[in-house]
Figure: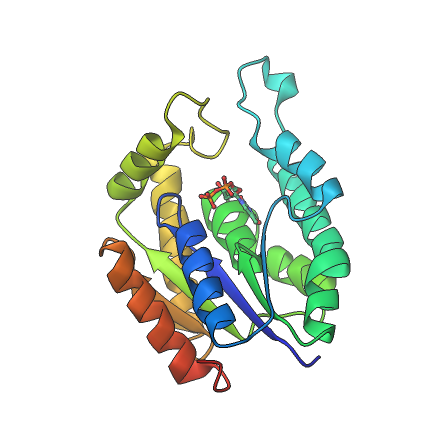
Length: 216
Ligand code: TYD
């Protein structure tokens, strides 16, 4: 694998999508070939899974995905994404920037929903194989700030299934990301996402310079 794989993680409202675009522009400015992608929904099959996973739950309880089903659909999306987008990009020598990846499953389905963490680690390893990010940014911010930002960004659109979850759920997800950052400091760069966009971008660039192979 000759490319470089970077993931962006964190709770809603942390500005991951903006930071992916800013880093992609900086890298392209240095002549790199960059792939910007995201989960869930980075492939046509993934788009269908994304609709199923994020649709607001307004119907009867039987209309809801149970946690193991949600987990397996996230992993199905990832398997498809790795096969169609991530590995081909890396094999072609590109830098792949992905908005959410395996750490989101640990944080949301593990810490958030309470699915066994060892089981998630096993399933993520099965699906990802050697396709692991060399560098991960966790954009961290207080839950109240993130929920407010997500609310402003959404405008009149319907609240998706995850945004509608309780504050306690989002607190557990945040704790999950912080635990991942503590456990893997060599891979994970923790950034305070409550800062202005430009300051977060500067921290991302510093992280790439420090941990990436002379990309910038
Ligand atoms: P998205 O609109 O992409 O959220 P954001 O803009 O905050 O990144 O929605 C993706 C949602 O899916 C988000 O709430 C997190 C959730 N998710 C999981 O629960 N598990 C996963 O493995 C992934 C990849 C995402």
